[in-house]
Structures are given as C-alpha cells and as structure tokens.
Length: 317
Image 1 (cartoon, rainbow, N blue to C red):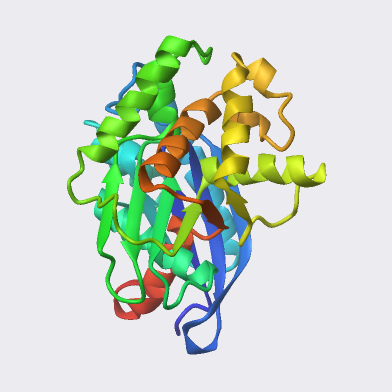
Image 2: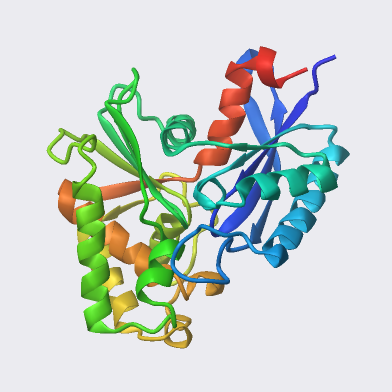
C-alpha cells in the first residue's frame, strides 16, 4: 500500500531541512511537519566547499538520524537531496557512504541545473504565477539559482557559485566588514553572473520571485521596518527595490555580527553571513533591473515533494 506521507530532506551548505507532507487527492499535498538544523558544511577550512570534516560528517549523521526518526513517526517515505557543499566535496562519496551506513538514508547529489528546476517547481506551487514571465532567484549558502520561465519549460535554469556562506568565507572570514572587501565581493558577484552566458539579463520579466534564507531574511527586516514586528508567513510578501536598498545600506553599515544583531527582524544565526547574501541580492536587483521581489516560502524541498509525486513509480511504493 502506498504511504500516505512523504518526506524531503534538503542538505544545503548552510542548513539541513526536513519537511513531511501528507498526500491528498489529485496529487495535492499538505505540509504537516518541518525541521531545520543549522550546519555549515566545509566551514572548518578556507573559502571553498571541497572538504567535509569528520566532525561535520558526525554532526550530519546525527541530524539525519533525528530527521529519520520524525519521518518514521509518520511512516513517511524519505528522499534526501544534497546540493553544492556535498557535490563539490572531494570526499563526497565517503560522506554519503557514512551517512547511509549509519542511518540507512541514501543521499542523492543533484547538479545545479536540477536544483534550479526543483526550486522553480516549488515556487510555482507557492504563488500564482501562471501566464507570467517569471524570474525565480534562490540565494543559498553555496550557490544562487536563477530560473526564467512561464508555464512551459524554463528559458534558462542556472546555478552560479555565489552563496552567502561561500562568499563570507572568501571575503569576510572574520565576519567583519571592510569597504575594500565589500567592493571586491560585489565585483566578483557581478563577474560570476555576467560570465554565465546562459543567463539572459535583458529578458522581459513580469514578476521576480525570491526564495530561501537570504531573501526571506531581507523580507523579514523590511516587514519589521514597515510594521515594527515580524509577520508569521512571508509567502507572497512583496518588497520594492527602494526598500531593499535601504535595508542593504543598514546591513552593510554594521561592521560586526554583534552590531548586526541590533537589526530588527534579522535572525541571530544569520548575522554573520547576511552581508554576503545582501551583496548578492543587490547585484541581482541592479543587473536584472528589478523593481520588486515577491517571496516564495516554497523552494527546493517543496520541489522535491512535487517531483516525487510527479514520478510516483520511481519514488512512491
């Protein structure tokens, strides 16, 4: 008998996420439980994501064990997906073998293009973007995904190696901001996006959609400025370029994580990496000439669920 519940594990560079969904009629689903654990893979050494340490392997195993235990409570079938930090690690095979041996969970390493397409699937489910030319931006810890499309296949779905954790290690290893490093980081972001010939900067865009941690954090800070409080759900929340640039100025004026903790609406655990994330989003606004961005709370993990439902024969028993 096919399970009524399915679970998606998203193993990112900055955090691991679990969502558990209850399957409904006509391929619909309802998210009934979720967990998040902050873990920065490859954070022990240098700017790259090319080595997962023994400590990080052990921590990953413990997190996956807890996720599996929760999924088992619902008798949910699990699909675990890993992104940039794992796919770039030279010891990735040792990592996925260790996790499988200790938890029984097989990890599927997806490439950047697949990641971008799954994110787009999630965003399409989260917001009513039918019949619109949509640019979807997802700023993660190790990479940023760009998808442009409508109801048909995306015009492009690209992953660029610029992420909040990656660029923090490269330009702000002490988490302290200096003008010279801000400028260097900003130039690197622009070069990285511009050098991807598959990303068309002059495409007609009717709606810009943003997902994941950096963009939700920006939306939370803007919500705090507007209302003096944080709203429960950021899904569908739209902020303007003008509002964003004001928040970016505030974030980049706070030189240390301790100073950034005073910013209303900013999650404390993101105070160290938010400047790099803001610099990525700043370049996105500028290069694509965006007027506003609407937040999608659905991203990769929800896309995984949708992909499992669409491919029942492969993923659902």
